[in-house]
Length: 88
Image (tube, rainbow, N blue to C red):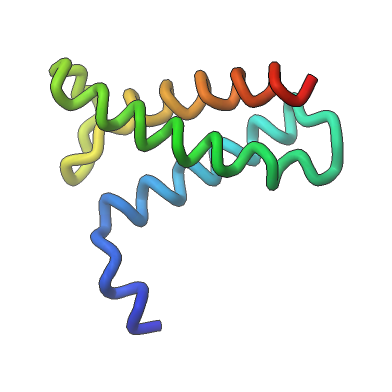
């Protein structure tokens, strides 16, 4: 439990939101039972990339603790669509 205290809150929130978005995407568009595990790295990576790209562009809408949620979720969805095309 002490290891969770070392993770900064925006990073933890990013992982939670990316995981939630990934599994909602899997529930709507997933084709296989285990494809949620395939989508998860794409979702987390896309969320991180979207948040990193949104910050210098000034697209910091829905900023929570230094984490641009809208940019992160948009990046997550784009990465999940690419993963869905790879899986198809």
